[in-house]
Image (tube, rainbow, N blue to C red; front, side, top):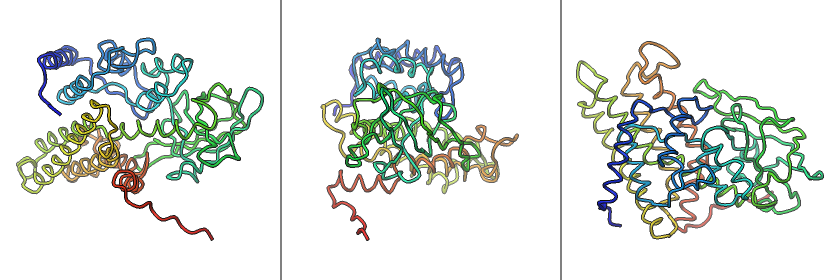
Length: 397
């Protein structure tokens, strides 16, 4: 594709830069694993008002209502990264559920949930994994039994991010027990305040409870909460997973993290010399920079496909694997650059960036597993992208 920008696009870039400069004092980070604070909510509203968040989502659903323009979206991402400005709220509701509802939701569901979710007024969690259904998600056993106009749900979910803070859940349940496992699943939306739901936080090595167990005991949910239709949950779930993998492999977020690493290496010193001047550390940083550039250019492959109306193909399949592993590698180099300060955690006068590098190093290791493990991602790339034979299944006893 031709990457040269037209005068119109250059003017749009200047407009974005002007906005960021004028509102520098309003920058507020979004929350991925907690309820957003008022400053983050206000920043989100401002971004939607100016079309820098929810840009192409129709106004009737709470978005800005612009026509799809992939190059302008790209310019926005580049300029926010350059300025170190947060892109607004990014969570399971906004980044995963909203595009799913736009794709397959009913008009009633779109009107009820998209606007509130975009503005951060409703926080969602994702009820997918179970103790016996992780990588093989279609084996899930949480059941929903029909009772009049309701489903009565019983079962358990695990590794449920944000469950302790969430207002709502988008949840996979088995509504057709006699159907083949992929055909018997439905995708439901319901309140986490519904009687019969118990949330038990799971503390991880970060020291925080990012994940939770969720237990359902005779939870009564109206049938109207089904998205697309009974037994269509596997199709809807995969639409959501597509958006989840895109969220976890955002090249602009990874590039911003690389910039933060380089700034850290300019300020941290050994024997009075900044680490960026050390040939070993500089070589490691350059190797990561080359991977970030490869990730960025792979994003341009996907951009080209989108502009041509073609599927992303291999460019889309590698995004999640590439992004999660690279983010962890960047955090690992930051820990090494911090030296003895890298082992500090929680709170203290010597912490850098409020301990975010240590937290990212541990949390990102989990993301290599979550959302589809690296091993499963490699199988998908090999089988669907490269056309290699499917992995042999274990013979049944």
